[in-house]
Image (tube, rainbow, N blue to C red; front, side, top):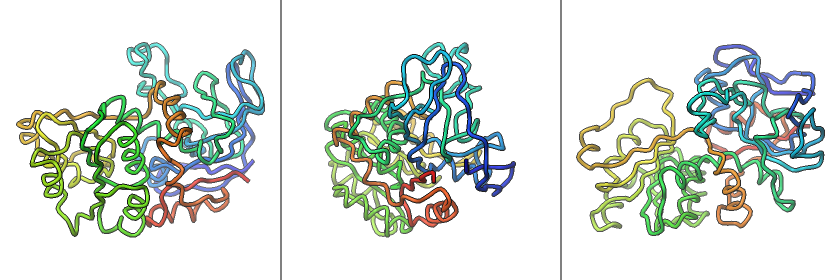
Length: 345
């Protein structure tokens, strides 16, 4: 079978290779991948800016159908339609695993960077990490469950968006748009989405199409002025930082109200960035850092997407065969694409 493989360490070294199909081991199932989204993590691995263990097949935002079960597998059967948590090889014994936080186990190796992932035809997964999807949920839509589960975990479960909250989202990429939709589904009364001139042609346009009224380009409008005007000078209850841009991260403190919350999602790929620490301290704001997904966020996300409360499928801009992976990555990096799905051939 063909697979998109990061062959060795260093920038680049990504190629389509012929590999042997995996075989499911004890407690595992074999999944025929129907769609897999390109994540920012995949782009970071391409450029050698995220941990990975080559040679490794990329891809973790998958949806598919079980075609075989391994020895001892008893909860799923061939034909089941599934998505899966990318928390493989968590040790199960450390403090984090024992408290239900396998997603940040220090020895976890997820599909797509730690072990072989889903940019191929067949993927093996432990059945304990799987979630069934409704019969009438398309595989394309289901491939959006994993990134959406990130925003549900971050915004709903950790930052605890509340009914009536005034929310600002910085960075209108796929995760930023999903975070905005998640905040709206969680009861936010108003969501402001902030981007840069580079976002104007595609991302900010999509934000308006999704029904967000306050969509700002920082080169034309000062977001802090808008937030003050719309909140009577108080500031945002919740600021969700999705861009990973140092200037945007620093601006969260200006935007948030006293005793407000800052939800940190975007990664900077830098060791240090400047941050107005004292200003944040005097605002007595909460800063919530986030990484990956919780068990509870997955079925919650499937429900929110299936009922239309989070129309995650609206961010799909491209659906391409796996053989066109290079074009797909180029479109993402040029910001001519939002969410790109690769389809095994």
